[in-house]
Amino acid sequence: MKLLKKSKFLIIGAGNMGISFIKALIQNGISSKNIFILEKKVSKELNKIKRNKKIIIKKSSSDLAENLRPDIVLLAVKPDQLNAALDEVLVSIIHNSLVISIIAGKKTSELKKLTKNPMSTVRAMTNTPVSLGMGTSIIYFDNKISRINRKLSKEFLGLVGQVNEVKNESLIDTFTAIFGSGPAYIFLLMEVLTKIALKSGLKNAHSMVIQTFLGSLLLLLSDKISPEVLRQRVTSKGGTTEAALKILSNPNGLQKLFDKAIAKAQKRSKQLSKN
Ligand SMILES: NC(=O)c1ccc[n+]([C@@H]2O[C@H](COP(=O)([O-])OP(=O)(O)OC[C@H]3O[C@@H](n4cnc5c(N)ncnc54)[C@H](OP(=O)(O)O)[C@@H]3O)[C@@H](O)[C@H]2O)c1
Image (cartoon, rainbow, N blue to C red; front, side):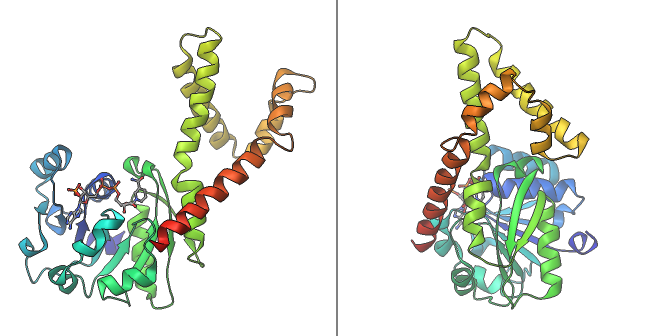
């Protein structure tokens, strides 16, 4: 954190993801004079942050000071916007920076070509709970990345949640399929349970489902034991839970369904990386 406190940041693209990082920087006491934003279309939320915290927002790379030398750059535009974003001016501004990309499907080799900064460009991926500082992120460093930049990258991503390093870049596709899309799987399960409860006449189903998820999670965290053990604890022999789990855990049950679903998502992530 000491290193981050002294750093200058440039966030390229302040949409859903970029804004989460901007908020995290501010919450972690980074001086607003060290936070620079490049964003074409300033949203109401971004404007509000600007008014309150006086961060510096520019709409185009040519509006940035030529001598701006950010220590850390976050690439957070959509995949198809990256080529246009990294124009000559921007490339010269970031040529000595640590550049971290969270852009889906953009491989390290391609990123390095676009940034023209092969020594300090790293690829990461994250998921939507970053907006609450509860993201799960993954990061891949090729052998060019210095020890200090590895540390800085992890600290930076750590501002928005948990960070895990992978040694093999293809695991980013696996991560995307499981954890990038993960929140959607959880929400689907909640929807399914809500529908059944409503159909059965339980009026407050939505809030009961939320409370059940929250309560189960807090139980897991407070007991510090595995989900498997907790599941066994609530499954008494011959009881109702066991009756349901027999169906969910049969050879064609949830595990098989998820194996298939994740494999499909992984394949799609790989396809998107090729486009
Ligand atoms: N959302 C997720 O759950 C998630 C999770 C992990 C990773 N990611 C990755 O994060 C990246 C950003 O996703 P997002 O959901 O935050 O997208 P987003 O909301 O569309 O944000 C991107 C922002 O960048 C702006 N922009 C585009 N080109 C620009 C340029 N040349 N200069 C300055 N600003 C520019 C866009 O403006 P316009 O709208 O005017 O184009 C937009 O406001 C994506 O590459 C995605 O793959 C997203």
